[in-house]
Image (cartoon, rainbow, N blue to C red; front, side, top):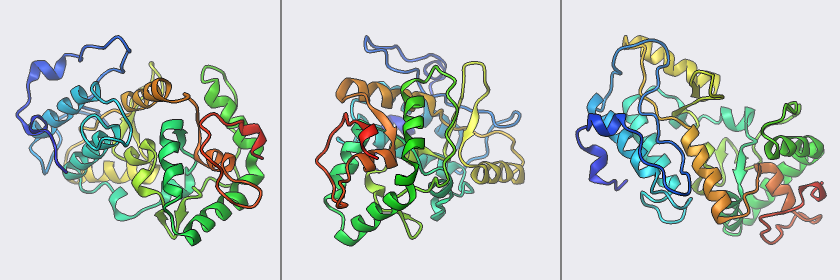
Amino acid sequence: MSLPSEMSQEPNPQAENQPASQSSSQLPEPLSNEAQVTQTTSPPLNLPSEQLQASLAAASRYLEQVNNIGLSDDVQDLNYLIDFLVFIVDQAYPFIPCPSGCSNCCVDSGLPRTSALEWAHIHGYLSQMPPDVLKQVIEQNESRHRPQHQQFLAEQARIENPDTDLALPKFECKECPFLIEGRCSVYAVRPTICRGFGYFTWRPGKERDSQIFACQMAADTLLDGLRQIHSPYAALPAWNPISDKVYALNRAQSTGVMATLPLWLMAHTDANGQILPLNLNPDFSQSG
């Protein structure tokens, strides 16, 4: 991965402690460059601690310059920045289990919220799939999730009304339709949330503490690894500013629609199991 030289320079304490200025488009706050997962002390790293902190601080500044998702393959591309952050965290904490081919989150939490911008990439990728793979993806979505269409509409109401107290629907199946034999069939264009899961922290509310942004197994493995090397502290980037950036770009560059990935696929599959032309503002209620 070709990275700006700034991301491997020695840290600048003033730069790390000062929030980057916001532009008129109200970009999100910079990434947190530390996240305490238990107590105190500095993190043990394969990378020097100073280098990790400098890289996280540099990524924070580059986040403000991001202006696309999956288009430019450089520091202005959010996917590129996420991949860089995952890379340096993985170098620092090699006991994080996510690179091993584990697909637990795809089975237990495979209904990721996906922006219209991200769905456009996935929809375009479908035309490049081998026909048998695409057929399997569609069949899996139809058999697993079409019977849950009403639950997906209830979840869509929650997405579109985030300040309400609508109950989380009860899904019988949460497995991603793009998962085939334990592997992601759209890995190259997978949503941002799939790229970052397992390597970030997130804060579920302003008054809530940060949590490890991972499944329980991955979080437990990270904490066990820290205990084994006698450090209860991990330096992880924060997911919330990344999520805010996704929403901001989706509003500015597309329709602003956000939906679960299986619902996007349902809205683009006809009665004969064929993929429909791209529609970034579909009537999801008619996709059942």
